[in-house]
Image (cartoon, rainbow, N blue to C red):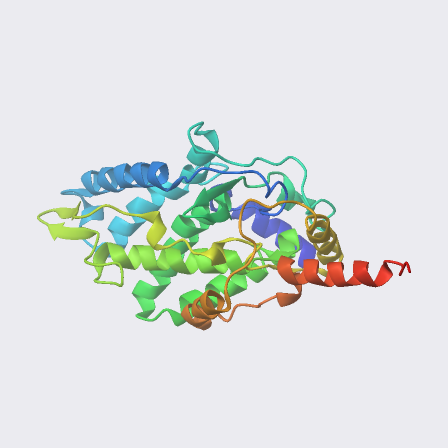
Length: 305
């Protein structure tokens, strides 16, 4: 019965809303250039187009309709979100594309038809799926927030969806980083219309609709908690064994991207996202795994007099 329900959900949910899994540890030793400026330029063009499309039309009459137009311009195609598809095809965006990954052997291989490539923004490694989550799930969070006047239900819905039809029951992975990207997406949609920590609203009400008042910057939202190495996911047991082994194999590599945070930065982010009730998997932190491996290897080294 459960499997039949999952298959039905898989068929009925539009493919453009799905964001598959990603892998930030494989080939982490490879250097990447920053993608923020290129992504910002595309998003700002889409924001202008979305406001012009709604000017003097029904979608320009209120905030949720204007937000929905932005969602449609960034998030939906038949298979991928528009922005993720654009990033994948853009040759000017430096990315790591994998055909094989630590996720091989997951209980639900349908989720690994495609692995999202890895890009870098402000020194943070993240899957392109996080950008899709940001604009797509962020809108649905905002939709619930607009109806309820509170973030609570939106956050609960996001957790439920990640544990079920967007995450664990499909792929064997409950991604904490997805939940952070979703929540930052909500903050983006709020920043379109309200005064926020990022400054004045991105959009201003004008006769017949809205207009862009200042440029969007993805760097305001991306943090190390978008990186699934820094913020490990919760895995089903058989997949967790594979992930642990992959992480151990990375211990000998000279990794280009940072794999850990200072205690101060870690606590700061945990405090910032405490309302998300993230399921921290500290036993999957690579610095801890590599330290344990080193201690274990030392213990096995024979003493020579």
